[in-house]
Structures are given as C-alpha cells and as structure tokens.
Amino acid sequence: MAKAPIQKFAHRISKYFVPHGLVFTFAIFFFLSVITLSLSTWLAWYMGGKLSWYPKSWIPPSMDSFQLALQFGISVMAIAYPCALGLATTTAVMVGTGVGASQGVLIKGGQALESAHKVSLTVFYNFLTTIY
Image 1 (spheres, rainbow, N blue to C red):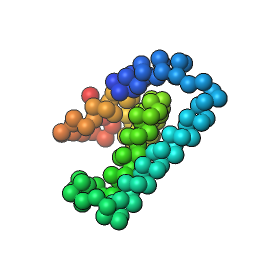
Image 2: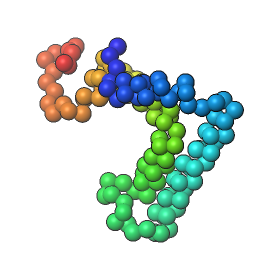
Image 3: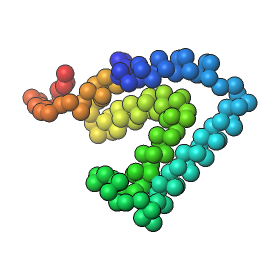
Image 4: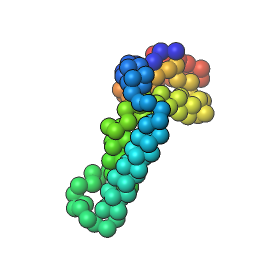
C-alpha cells in the first residue's frame, strides 16, 4: 500500500527522533508534563472564549471558541512532542480509510486519501468502478 507524502515525512522524522529522543525514565515525566501543558493551554483559550477575555474577531468565522482552543492545544502538543505528530498522521490515514470502507468506499492508501481534496468532478460509469 502506498504511503501518503505526509506519512513518509512523518516516518522520516520519527526514524531519527524516536531512537535518539527520550530515555524511558524521563519519558513518563515528559509525556505527563506535555499533556498538562496542552490541556492547560486548551482550557485557558476555551475559558477565554467563553468569558470574552479576547475579542470575538480573533475567532475565525468557521470556528467557535472550543475549536480554536482545540487548535491551540494540539499545536502545543505537536511542538512539544513531535512523536505525537508521527503517530497521529498514521492514525488519521487509518481512520480515514476505515470510515471510507464503512461507507462502501475503498481507498487504496494514504496517497489517494491525501490527493482526494483536489478532485473537483467525479463521474461513475457503473456501480463498480475505480477512480484514478
């Protein structure tokens, strides 16, 4: 199965980061501190949005305060713990292909899933078809 470019990039980074990254005894402390940091970041931005601590113009029209806070929390997690990014990309591709399969759409791999957003027109000739 072909890997998406983002998966290849994440694996390339993870290949060097993981073996040389963390010692097991410090990994638990590091992981817990990152979780605490990202959750506290999320909570601060979420409460700030609910209590109007920052202008509503800071929130994009397509988001609410929960989504903005979630975006900041995930950003902190990805910056502080790059392995999470490597694990998340593979998980996202697996979930995407799984959801497609549950809806009757078989996705060949990460490359097809990643390039699907560029499709502007899909024509089906018969019931069973392959999109290239």
